[in-house]
Amino acid sequence: MPKLFVKAAILIFFLFSGFVSVSQSSLISDIQLIGEKRVEVLKQEKKTRPYIYSGKTNPLVKYNPVNAVFGGLLFIYQNALSQQFSANCLYHPSCSDFSKQSVREYGLLKGVFLSADRVMRCNRIAATGIHPLRIENNKVQDPVDFYRFRK
Image 1 (tube, helix red, strand yellow):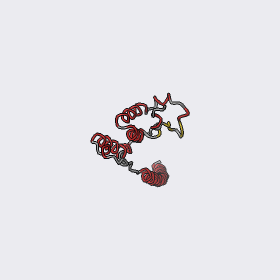
Image 2 (spheres, rainbow, N blue to C red):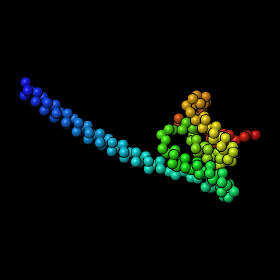
Image 3 (cartoon, rainbow, N blue to C red):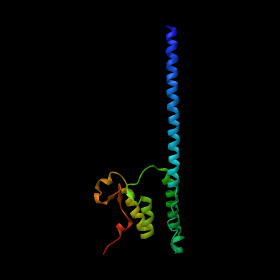
Image 4 (cartoon, rainbow, N blue to C red):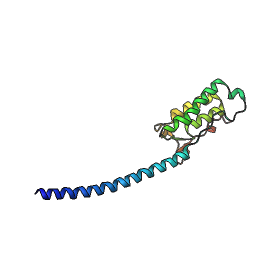
């Protein structure tokens, strides 16, 4: 009885040791492959978004302290904080790009109000009231020009 038990234990040990080593090597290669793909994706995604007033030539707008603080906060959010979140924005352009475009086009006051409205609508519950024709490529098309007064 003990000899049979020892032989069975040895057989089980060799079977499982071979299985574990094969699965570990395939697991390690899968992890390396995932890591390599992630590095490629990060290299493609690693773009620094420009400062909101980088193209402006008017120094009163560009160097205004309120505009500089708001633009700096938006720059820090887009280039440091936003990349850390894994959430996808429901809209195109994204909420931070929409904020940048609306402030650049309509000024700080109206741009902040449009941005606040957009951020409050950026959830899946508010998406139930969106017209289906505004959806392209699983994103709701909501450009800044949509909020311009028309005559």
